[in-house]
Length: 225
Image (cartoon, rainbow, N blue to C red; front, top):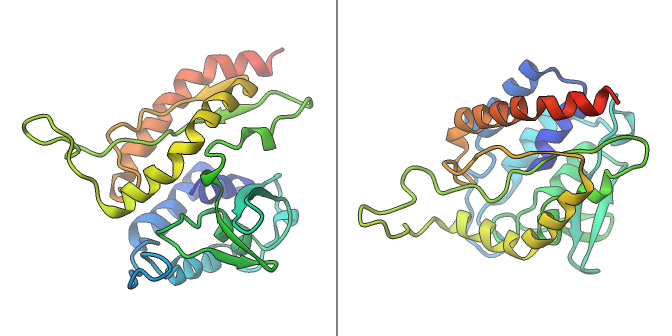
């Protein structure tokens, strides 16, 4: 899902425009609402494709005003793929194909799923000697206010949340190690927001604002070197 947020900035959107697009994409038109009998995935993915096409049309990665890349996993080769060129709708679609939730996406003759399967924080694709790297680490989130029962025992999450957590467990250790490549790490406190709780976008956004403000002194120090 990170590719969807990252591309807003790469398209040159200001904060207000990106915020409006996020509401449109995640709240008004929930991309995970076209449920299917789970032969290949819980959702068909057609609604997601329609939303991406409405937002980006035929725009190409290499034509964006700011540099953008996203990561998927080639299921056949069992390796990560860094997308630096191509139609935005296609490469973002590859990057957010959560296994079990979406069916894999066929692209350039290969089967692609979410890059988080192997690397949930692909900062190595951005590390460069040309300048400092600022990373945003969202983590696995929480389970929302109802994540615990009255007796304190954990509440069993929904199937989508369980699939996402299971998918990213293996890559979490690598993500922790990857953070050493960043000069500044912004860590929003999303413990009260479940992984698929799009209706909590206001709480998630505020957590991001708080974390970004806390990191600003470190960011300004880097810029003033």
